[in-house]
Image (cartoon, rainbow, N blue to C red; front, side, top):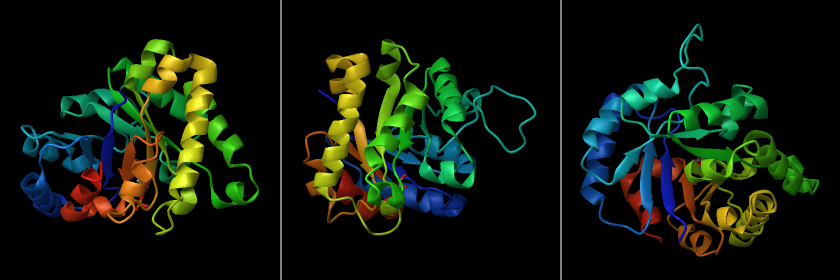
Length: 249
Ligand code: 13P
């Protein structure tokens, strides 16, 4: 049985006070759900969030990290630093990191390795831009993003990998992929994994969908057989909306 996961990517939102308020609200609304629930606050609030949610079934995860352990990388944070503050999962390869911070497949492959070396779980994001879809190149793009950053991994590493398909044209735009488009791509992703790693690994890896998931469309998307959850941006900033999505499972 694949894990179902709903993760809130807060991006660069919520200062310390806002984080406290939102976490208090999340704690009030939290109940047992079928999905694993995660939130990804900014670096500066990770430890506070971890402490505040220690006894709750909401995991605190990071939005990024560097691939080296330490050194002259001004402004960066490493895997062991995240682990020290209770973070065991990291989002890597988000399209905003790729677009605004020039993260490429090669750097992402190193980040994935560093996370796995530190026994961290990775939520690995990828997805095509609108032009790619319009020119019918979306499957090729997604395939190369996965292959270039992940196909050097060994079978055992896949226990620690969660995939997140986020078509760039659907992020923050209010335009979601249709449930059929999501299913079509998720099935393609699973088949791509199967061709290299076999059926067991392909069937056990969770593939999340991200891009304008809201309370009113979550259920339709999550009922698709190859969609195992969601990576939620805007709607994760309101506890009520976030839990409406979590409870769509
Ligand atoms: P939105 O849900 O705001 O479209 O963002 C999706 C996303 O980028 C999650 O990582």
